[in-house]
Image (cartoon, rainbow, N blue to C red; front, side, top):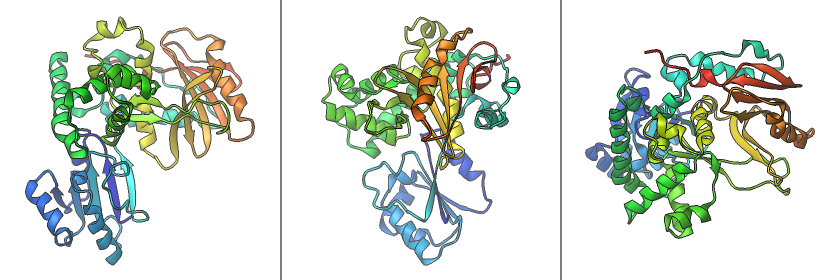
Length: 394
């Protein structure tokens, strides 16, 4: 495509990645007020020199029209690299999506394997889709998910060894988002209300979104709660997973599942400052699910055109934590915190597979847990999640 649009939250590394690419590209950032002013008055002149990278393009969404004009005059692959700290497809005021001219890529925060420069580890997820999958080859690393929950995947936070410095960084990140980035996306009259809604959303991570309940607890009108959640999603801070539905007219729940794109930020907003706080929470299982999602979203972002992540739940309460889809083939994942797995732990996956019938290929189901790998039945396995959150040797 002539245009590549790279989006992700502030501080995930978009600018660093953009600058590490093709040598000789012209680079401008709309954080520079002079460049921003020129983009709003005479954008076509700025775009005459190519190839070009424009950073933080969400600050002037009308700029996309100028990019469209240039592409239509001369279509050269890779001419434009645009980065943005907001999902342009969800933003109001975006007058053109560059359909047929642009490819959109998501850059989530690092997952542990990426940060440790062991990106080949992500191949384990792809192997789940293979017809000849061998459970004995599954990675057996010892895991420490609490360590990664507290740190998340922002490079700046991961670079700190001291927990107190990391907590100061998250505090500053939230303040910057509220005072700067959020105001660029929408007019928010009451920042404390918005921050309270962020904390409530963090404390309900990995659960179904009930906007009426959330609005009531936050003391906000439901339309305001709805708008605030949309802003968090537009700002690339949260993801709302859609339920996988085999029968749209059936009894499946239509609510989406809320997850944060960075588990460290979510933990900080929820008041989790150390391991003891985490271990004493009654919802600790949901936080394990949130932490493992850090790796799953990275897997999806590597090929977002052909990979999707859902969850599943029917009207009787049977559920599957994550349903991975690759090229139309499905894999069900159930997350367990303990070392022991019983056959009944896979009942939700069995129910899901039965509900599919012949409508879509179901490859296999997996119960991810803290213990050893073993088969549970036909195309059902218990596998350890340790490699997704590897223990750090100090």
